[in-house]
Amino acid sequence: MDRLQYGFNEIIKRNNDGSHATRANRKRMLMMFAEQLKDAGYKTNNMRPSDLKGRHVNALIKKWKQDEVSTGTIKNRMANIRWLAEKIGKADMVKSNDVYEIEHRKYITNIDKSADVTAQQLEKLSPYVRQSVELQKAFGLRREEATKFSPDYALGGYDPYTAPVLRIKPQWSKGGRYREIPITTDAQRDALMAALTLAGDGSLIPSNRSYKEHIGHFERETAAIGLGQTHGLRHLYAQNRYKELTGFDCPAVGGLVKLTAEQKQIDIDARKIISQELGHNRLSVTGIYLGSWSVK
Image 1: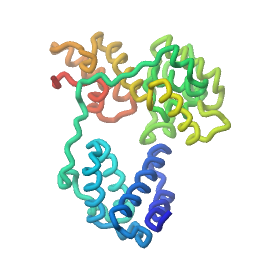
Image 2: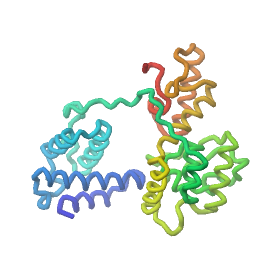
Image 3: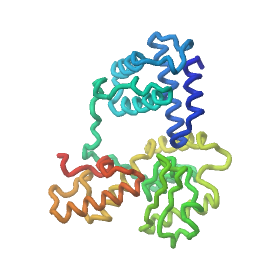
Image 4: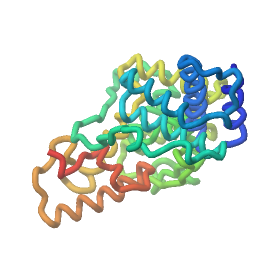
């Protein structure tokens, strides 16, 4: 670890904002930035984070464009650079994405990005991974939420067959936001009973593994059955929930071409509910999962 990386590491230690996954990703990004600056000819072993200037940001962006890194990935990296710039008191060092000619990301494509998992695939997973995947499918949980999941807390003193809602603990969620998800189907209750039977008053991380170790195990198993990071299960939940609430399919799976005035209001109301259940605070984000009626 050179001097710049050491400095980054110290800043990360002093600033614990964000979930565990966010902090781990931030550290990985900053270490990579230091390596890329070193490869670009900068003497990072003699640099402190406070030595960073606009030219270093420009060098990184130039490299990413040369490497044909996707717009979405570049924007995520820029968010980490802005976080760092703020922590070292140089927020104005980083300009807007438009200044760097970083294209606007196209969020809504009306392409179905959902994924499902079969009983045969589930059988190939170890018990703790399988139960987390089943909860992702049943409730649209993020991976971190589904692995840190504690049935005892989530059920709030109820048993799986009488609980009205699923409680998501702030420490599990992105942005540390508490939320509740209505329990509306027998399949959801069966998934909760299976999770409770396995974890008891613990979580869906085996007692002999740390969260980091278990996530690595989770990724290897889900990749082996073709699920990747399982985000497609959140898309599937959103799409199924939309049809449950509206009575018709969303645009991402080829729903109605033109809505009546009444259907438009039903659509908006459903998106508000689904946005809350997924743990988002912006209604527009539902377009990523459901598509948009204005996109052809």
